Length: 522
Image 1 (tube, rainbow, N blue to C red):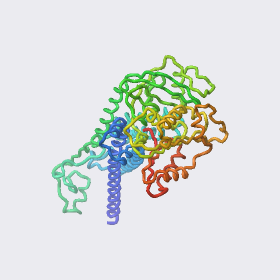
Image 2 (image 1 turned 135 degrees about the vertical axis):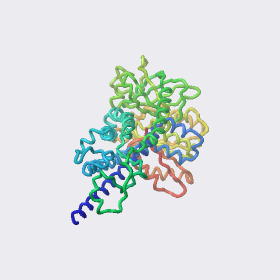
Image 3 (image 1 turned 90 degrees about the vertical axis):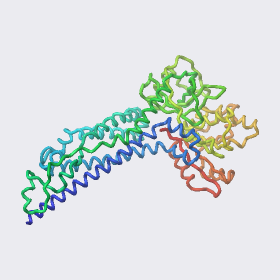
Image 4 (image 1 turned 180 degrees about the vertical axis):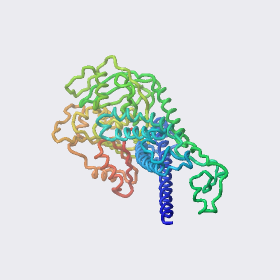
């Protein structure tokens, strides 16, 4: 009697453990299905740009949600990694239970082929096991290469491993048809708890006289796959969006000019038929001469207008791709840095442009007062805004613009020195000197030289050394623009971004609101 009781307790414990493992694996699979479908939506750049530019998105808060598309994509990716660990762990417990609790009464219900089968052998000889190993391998590569250090040091590794998502979804579709979990199809003919004469529990029939006898053997069938129901819609939408982008960017652009600026910065001016863009947007560049599969984002520093159809970007030579691209543009670059840019005309490499795509900087014109803070080459999103003011764009509500540019070296200001001076002179001629408030900061203490050229005198008077005192600047803006909503836009180092974000969250004075917007490429 004691032996029977112990075996019953052991069997009941195994059953509960099996049920727990199956429940956890099924629940985590549902979470994975949801996130594998949502993770694709933030990557539909053209769709997000269309939504941002339509009148249906009338609320500023709704538009700002679109700025978090990259954060949402990262959150879905992290969730996939976490619940993949949970899913794999639960299935490892299930394999152990299938092996230990193998029942010859229901062989179709067991993944194991005999009692005590090695779980490793089960993994390597079943479709769910092999595809699961491949999915874990691909997901691990994508997760490790997505770290900040890898993206900064070698962007190509991040790019190529992230494009393994195509293989990931193909294997995922195969993984779900493995039929690891089954359900009974003839419950009426074989209700739970009944027995047949050839079952191993027949010997216990005398002890349990009230058990019912079943009419036929239990039949089991794999569950209907549901992953494709979750993934097919977003996957088709993403594929359609990529096909549209491929057709739109199939014609190469005409490179009008390449201008070399100080501090390893290259300005690229291009021309493309039917290309329209708004200030603050960015494009993806593809140069087959460097790599046919890599696309790199660059903010537009000049948008096409009715008078001139050219558009331009500024890129800093940092990394393998930009170095090889610059060598194709300027085969023999001069080592000395000149103050005035040098224009070189030659036969340029073939270049494709995909875009434009929306970014938070588009909202600069939708505030009464905007504060734009740039760090180094992070000035590029706001250069296009300054070009729009210089070209006389109308139809926006912006009444005052504060522009703060922080650089390590003084020569960096020459990238857009002519633009800043031209805008300054235009506003003075229009008797609007208070419209544009400019502050330039040189952070390095050893950079004590000044702009000696006469035409840059308006910049010299606004040139400061050291780092900005953000609290003082916010208090000054709050006093001057009481009872207004100020849009704060930042594109620069994380230290500046964190300081501005913290000040925006803490209201400096009643009657004014600061809304933080950070530039981030998706």
